[in-house]
Image 1 (cartoon, rainbow, N blue to C red):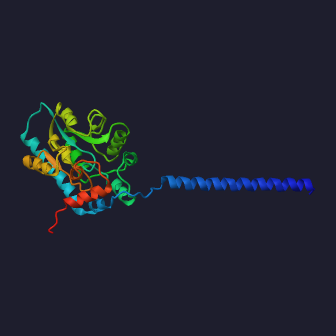
Image 2: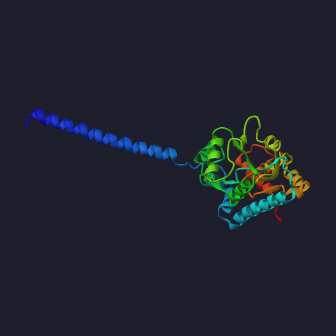
Length: 285
């Protein structure tokens, strides 16, 4: 081999080696960056206080029993309405909330606790995009039974119109819920706001609502909205005869307006919320 050929061989080998090393570095670096981008980062939000309620919902047989109890009671009330009410002028309807009433988002709550992430619109949208919420025990079975008897089902939820709405419809359909469409899944818009009364009234114009179900009193009637802790209790006492009949409540200790009322519906820091919760605790000393 001549000196020229030897130099050419060495130069070619060196270029090949550099190319292989560069490709390997870029591949490893890109993979590492992607892993970093998708791996949840541990934040600083004070979410540990929600752990007990989330564990209860995910693992307590008592929670499961309460969910079945609510839907068994709803079936009894619906059957009774068919027996005693022969009004055929308006079609029967059942109005249900979505989150923690027919679908279980405790996995999203658990994610926030494990990674100390607060509730944000971006985090919530990321969860909705997964379309991975599970069905509350008894929900699919009861609503399917009602729908087969000719009852319309309306899902009035404060998930937002647009992308959240699309993912919600997909999630409900995947779980086998009946009567799921753009018409029956009624999400929050700028026009409606978070209050559900206008959407309930829209359903009542064409239907006779037999049962309203939710995990939050605001899912049932406007009279419960924006009330203090004591006024919420009084509002419940004022319509005590409605519960177990037209109003059926699902358990949810993870979050809700009950907690917002403790904070007087104010935007508080984690430290201020902790202080408020401690103030509200009733101890024997």
